[in-house]
Length: 153
Image (cartoon, helix red, strand yellow):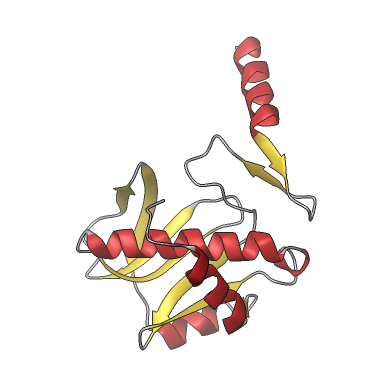
């Protein structure tokens, strides 16, 4: 068992890339996400994002834009499978969450990603309940959207 633990630690160390802000990305995971909580959603067809700016993203524009881009892709992939996606989010540790209308299951697997599914709240209620997060500037959201292309995650 001790050898397995050491092997796992060695793999994580090799797989980690340190961002310019000093935080690690773990490249062995299906998505290469910067640490930090983030939610992406649409209001009247327009992308919006809420993020933990004060604690994480204030030092890393690259990580913020990259995470928004990847969560947009997850949102679109869920929608293409018939899920009525409303909000897609990630916890600091990369656990993924999907809030959907008429959620019929607790988990969904999209392109190998295991995502927890919950019934979607109203957007205004959701924005109030995550009051520790800040709305991301529309410029960052647009930069993420422009950089995502048409490929899948």
